[in-house]
Amino acid sequence: MAFLLRAARWGLCPWRGYCSRVTKGALSEDFVAALKAVVGAPHISTTAAVREQHGRDESMYSCQPPDVVVWPQNVGQVGQLVALCYRQGVPILPFGTGTGLEGGVCAVQGGVCINLTHMDRIVKVNTEDFSVVVEPGVTHRALNTYLRDSGLWFPVDPGADASLCGMAATGASGTNAVRYGTMRDNVLNLDVVLPSGELLHTAGPGRHFRKSAAGYNLTGLFVGSEGTLGLITAATLRLHPVPEATVAATCAFPSVQAAVDSTVHILQAAVPVARIEFLDDVMMDACNRYSKLDYVVAPTLFLEFHGSEQTLEEQLQRAEEITKHNGASHFSWAKEAEQRSRLWAARHNAWYAAMALRPGCKGYSTDVCVPISRLPEIVVQTKEDLKASGLTGTIVGHVGDGNFHCILLVDPKDPEELHRVKAFAQQLGRHALALHGTCTGEHGIGLGKRQLLQEEVGAVGVEVMRRLKATLDPRGLMNPGKVL
Ligand SMILES: Cc1cc2nc3c(=O)[nH]c(=O)nc-3n(C[C@H](O)[C@H](O)[C@H](O)COP(=O)(O)OP(=O)(O)OC[C@H]3O[C@@H](n4cnc5c(N)ncnc54)[C@H](O)[C@@H]3O)c2cc1C
Ligand SMILES: *[C@@H]1O[C@H](CO)[C@@H](O)[C@H](O)[C@H]1NC(C)=O
Ligand SMILES: *[C@@H]1O[C@H](CO)[C@@H](O)[C@H](O)[C@H]1NC(C)=O
Image (tube, rainbow, N blue to C red; front, side, top):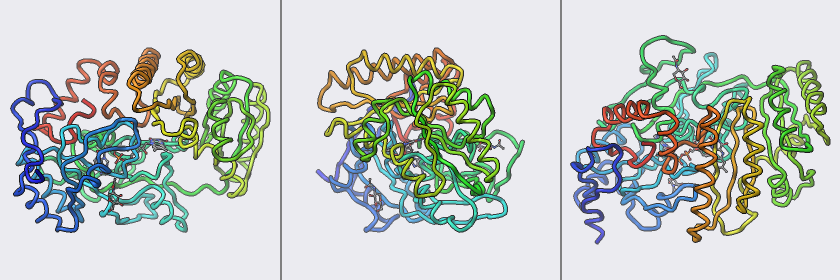
């Protein structure tokens, strides 16, 4: 049984018309032996527990595991693995740290999971050029620990300690994006092993310029491609100078509207806020319980300002004026690192605090992003819809970008509730599209938002994506069943 793990698979078709000709994954003993010859016996596994672990991420999707997991040690091995899989028609599944929230690593058609964490070198820091080259096993926290004494840092900070290449693959962002941008703004170059086994340097080998007008932006094509076009084996990232000083602040509001209005006003006043996060009353209550804090249970903004001592004073004053004008109370601020992290503790643990509201349940996070002017109306409406739905959920958001999450708790064994959660998420996605927004600000399309992607970019847009995919991956073997 171990030898003919998968005979022929027909599964989902990534684009119309082609798939019936592709025979997926004949994982014969010979094939597994060939993989083993590439990575070495200690770096391959077909045991059920290991496969199981690699068949899921942090999302609510319960998926099929891959047939085999391999740990390549270098880019040469990645190229050989991909070439082998391609020849045999076996799906290839890039695996970062598995913190994704959209089922991106699920092996819907089985195949070979490539766990990239052994490739974990920080290859080169170019201090004067503000850039760094990292391999896929490096996480954003590991990079910042490494940079600690350099005066530089990498600001993109999803809540989980994700791999930087996985973050590039999903187009991730986090709390600092309002000031420093998302992965889209901070990836300068990528090394990508293509389905053909060739190595592509998206901006040319070793290049790390600030600007260029040289042809199509291939780096941009691979940011957010979710493993469907190739495997990212190195990323050149933009670094930023560590700010001279930092102040954190929180304030509570009488209503959702007042909190979100304040966000819009702060941005309109051109206060260069570094972080501005919204948590609703249910989220604050959950955070108080989980992190043993005693914040006022009300819609709340968490803010952070970066700059010189002098400019911070001004920023803080301006923000306080605006929030007070909108009815804020309990404005508290902190300057010392320890105080600041205590203030931010609630926000950092928000996902786990939400999970603790219903132990044993899974979380599903919606992820819409709208033009900032439309943010107040959609957040207020979502809050009302959430109350009316009878679902348990919290709202937390990177509101400075117009991006917010409804964290919905769902019993994965209750199909009726799962259905209601999916319907709620779909409706919210459509609402955002109606306001000229997007169905995903940062988590990606994965398995569940493929229909919304079509509605978002339209028939021509999706068709161009399909053609690009077919050009790079004619047999549809790179992370099949995702995005398209
Ligand atoms: C508590 C919590 C908080 C979070 N907060 C945020 C947040 O604030 N902002 C945000 O954007 N996200 C957030 N996330 C989601 C998640 O951390 C990001 O999506 C992250 O970018 C995933 O990285 P990963 O390495 O874990 O990728 P994985 O989950 O391993 O993979 C995600 C997708 O990328 C592909 N992939 C991974 N590595 C590569 C590679 N080297 N080459 C090609 N494809 C690859 C996979 O095939 C898959 O499709 C959060 C998740 C959790 C659990
Ligand atoms: C991927 O491999 C690393 C290194 O061996 C390991 O620590 C990690 O747990 C693996 N991922 C999963 C999901 O098992
Ligand atoms: C290309 O796209 C990447 C990723 O979105 C971006 O960081 C980079 O600045 C772009 N490059 C150019 C030359 O526009």
